[in-house]
Image (cartoon, rainbow, N blue to C red; front, side):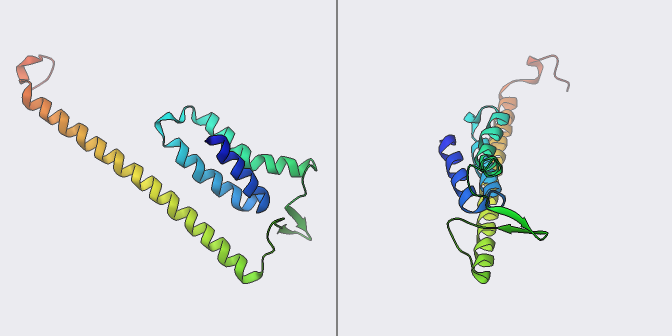
Length: 144
């Protein structure tokens, strides 16, 4: 599943430049995978998911694919090989992308925080129940 996500990040990074869409997609993908208990080593996950965007940068620099970002007269020019943007639609599209990215990441992180809070409450309640069942004098190391 991770490799499919990396492939999609790489494709979208090339279609919309690796500096525009790729980092946001990589970040939200990394958040999604890293909150899973089976995520494994986080360092490996960072390297693999970052490869989706960074591979496009490397391929552009070595000339294997056409560059999507150039500096022209001191201005950073980003071009998409897939879409030709016009001024108002590009701003609207980028604003919508930014909003979707922020909202979706906030929703995922909020759900994780609520689940963690619920688990902590359940643990505290179980500890309280256990204290009610076990007499205090059963463990001499527990102070009164």
